[in-house]
Image 1 (cartoon, rainbow, N blue to C red):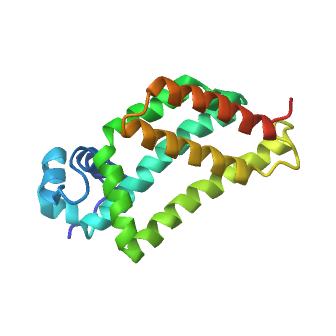
Image 2 (image 1 turned 180 degrees about the vertical axis):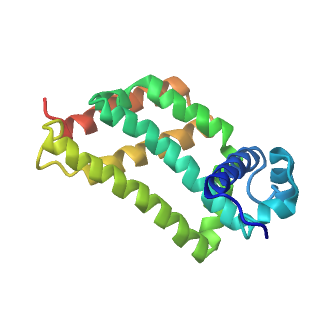
Length: 198
């Protein structure tokens, strides 16, 4: 294999991950072939394997990429010191839109994790890393006086994530979107007020 400049390698990997994200969300994990991703990038399948040894490895990288972009979205709100924006209908609408675009990907993720222990462990690591980073930022907000010093941010955050996942699932199965948005706004507001300094 020819040597490549590290910056080029990172850019090539990012391009492949983005193409993988598109392919996996379009077709799902099992229906997506490495050939599909190679075509989107405009390279041979062999070129993809120079960077990722398997479709499963690429899938994990795509999951990390998606979670990272979601975390960045939340972090931009956290860093703006306007945490109540998370409780807005607009914020929840972006989640509904994303779920409608990535339904096959999400279903494959849960199905594969339910029957593959190694897969589930890797997904758990990825989620835990993302969660830990958010908790670290919450510590900074406590120091700044935005979040109450004694607030258990982890419990509140898990509650918000559970609410989000439950409401998004119900919308996917046909629940009324306006009811889901109203529930999101009201319950998330209650949860955030538990940890925010007034």
